[in-house]
Image 1 (cartoon, rainbow, N blue to C red):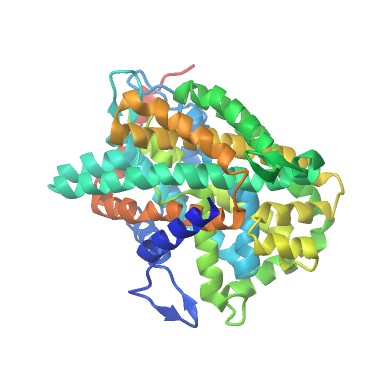
Image 2: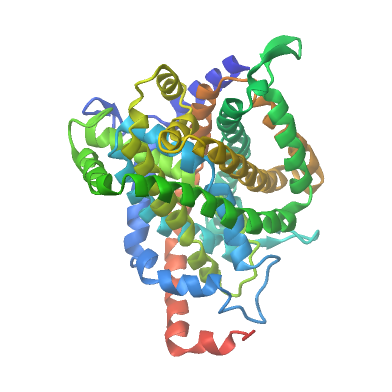
Length: 493
């Protein structure tokens, strides 16, 4: 199985991470897909007039339910859709991906993660707005949205019918693989490593499936069972679970972070100084400024998914009248996920120095790209029992991410193969949870990252082509907001 992942990893890396345009700069390979994400984020942020800053306050009012109307269409509330999307983004990536980025790119990678979060807010706004605008209400009561819908339907309206259809099929294919890889394999492989640190029985070797293997697969069986209980119920059940789990797990994790930051309070200014210095320093780890930038953007996107078109699948089910309104709600995803949670994780890892290794266990974890263990060591260096609490948080993070990504992949599967075959996908997804506990984790991280980032290529192309439509909708929405029309039509509870 490991050989299969290595072969697939090499195949997709050759196709999707080619350096034909950028080549080697300062000895660092600059992936085209990372440049594509940066260019798309910068262009849309300027084109939308920095909507990620000027509409931030208004979007909070929408999340709180101030602007719902009698004409809202959808099946879940704007807050539930935000919580569902956050359950996919606020996960192991905030714990593991941050440590991986800093271990490979130095402390400066944290700065570029923050910048990726800032630009990602506009990317997310654009793709979610298009998702709601081009969503499709199916006969079974479910809703189809996300990149495959606005690429096919939106580009068709631009006279690009065949191009849109091809890009939508490619997008859906990568979405399924991304759901099985980053939304499943990565989550389990990182979390089982932590669980084995706290439950010794999971490390013990037994004769399993005809092979001598540790008992980690039992954790996979448990996760497959409880995940199956949720995903069989569809988006409504997923949204209900996410709305309850996400606030609790974020608060639990942030309380731990605040404790650590309080311990190192006087050193925080020095940590920020190090982040900024290494972000632009030609002597920074792994290729200087470019190395830090690549790791920062790559891992940030792995965490917040901005520019990938995935979150639009959850947001398209929201009860809203104006597509722009849900787009504004989505601004909080990259902000909470990357600007807040990832930054705080980065400070913990940098202040404790765990990303530098120094012990046999840490060096092995860094080499295997087991970022969750690196972060766990950082917390454990401050309070001995924090890794146990972190284990609970990781369990919830992995679970919430998987149930949402199972839905993302299922919608892509339905787009390609029809609603009647969706149960096949669900069983495949659950089977991959178990597979993740018996294969190499380092290869999975690489494989998952490539499949994840591959979504950006067709998605951002569509966002750039249709960005004029989003800008026009935003302008019309702003006119109604300033005139007081939106306040008049809102229902007062």
